[in-house]
Image 1 (cartoon, rainbow, N blue to C red):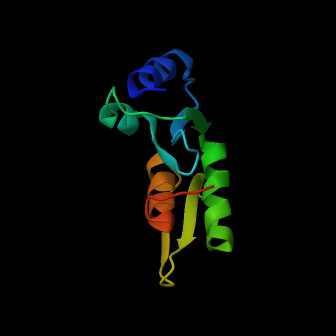
Image 2: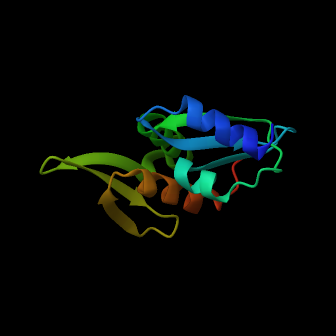
Length: 116
């Protein structure tokens, strides 16, 4: 599947609750997660992919929980959902639960390389 085909498919299939894309190579040895908008802005039409999935906040949160384990939690404070994340170095970070927060944590934890 070429990048241009993925762009067309994403634009046709995407629901409002989907903020993330998971793509993999044809060899199925590498997964990449990204924000849909960022992926669409950067993908080149000739790039080859094995396929893709569109993910919701819940699905991405589950992926981040799998990667981080007990170092990641979602809490509520004054009606706002917050992420509490303990980095590898032991420092604690608290920030709003947003698509950008989830992708930034996943990228930091996996250093951009996910093999599933």
